[in-house]
Image (cartoon, rainbow, N blue to C red; front, side, top):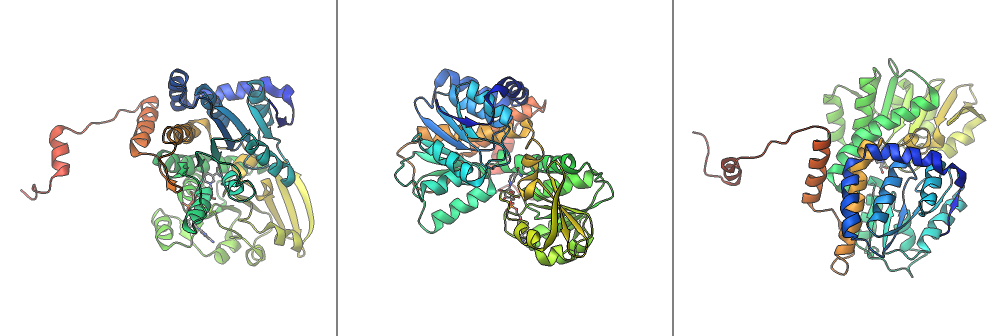
Length: 416
Ligand SMILES: NC(=O)c1ccc[n+]([C@@H]2O[C@H](COP(=O)([O-])OP(=O)(O)OC[C@H]3O[C@@H](n4cnc5c(N)ncnc54)[C@H](O)[C@@H]3O)[C@@H](O)[C@H]2O)c1
């Protein structure tokens, strides 16, 4: 086994956190139990490029118990939990990830997992898939899975221009992923990241949420619940209207720039906050990003116009502008929930990663029968994942009567 991690001696500390997360991941635990008996992934190398967190470790262990040889690299240079990486290595799983690694090391690690000639690749942001379609076209895989909105957008673009050469399961498109992970996970953990980085009170602050998609609406709802005055910036009129009807002020980015105290970008787009907005901002504003890549805030331009740049707290950097205003940036503009906090809580990653494990199984079971296109997992899988999670939360599920089933399928019964 080979690996490249920060400190193997932290394995015990990491194992405790992996076990703690595992206690709240009952759905994947039930899949893991079945995997142990059926071994559906036997003999297959699965290369994963995911955030190296305690929750991901539970996915890696489930894949291993299913017979696979999982290999893990980080999907973001700042999200790796070094103790968790050590715990996985102690379990015999190869990990190539060091928190804070530079860009060269990040890509060296991605190539290291691909060097294991995987049967399946598992991505969060499509970095493995991109390299499979560029520098490593020599590698043949059964298929790939993709965790996040931004990755799915990139892969759909590849499918649209005919570049895609492998079947891909868009895990993000499963209802039990994006409706829960993106909304409740990002909603809570992004604010957690901003609070850990700054220790500010959100109540009474003008919090600007840029992007009101699955993630943005979660962030807005949670900020509202904590007493912030939420302002939404959107380019889509329907989503903007939804935000307005939810009771939020909806402004242009220019207007919001002048009013916000805290800004959270979560669009999957580039430079949604840029010099024209920085110019209008108040002294002491905090900028954070929860979208996949660190390009939502134009930090290069901010850096160029700043006269001074200094760290004020862990994960919080201050840019001093020529006119003396200070603009603070959390977690280097990278995913704030993973850079400054611990990512999504295990409760929600349970569902996302169950979908990942089942997607790998589905690709392997359907080897040779799939086209190079984007697939969504069958709806029964989504419903099963939701049912198990609901049971674990103590919820009961009503069943349709035979009469109701017939009524819903017919058109003859109308106004009595
Ligand atoms: N932080 C995390 O842990 C986490 C979790 C899930 C997804 N993500 C990432 O968050 C991003 C958003 O994901 P999502 O599922 O909410 O996507 P989404 O497509 O549902 O929502 C994005 C929204 O941003 C809007 N938008 C685009 N450009 C804009 C602009 N210039 N100004 C204002 N609004 C703009 C779009 O109209 C859309 O409504 C993606 O990059 C995704 O990969 C992060």
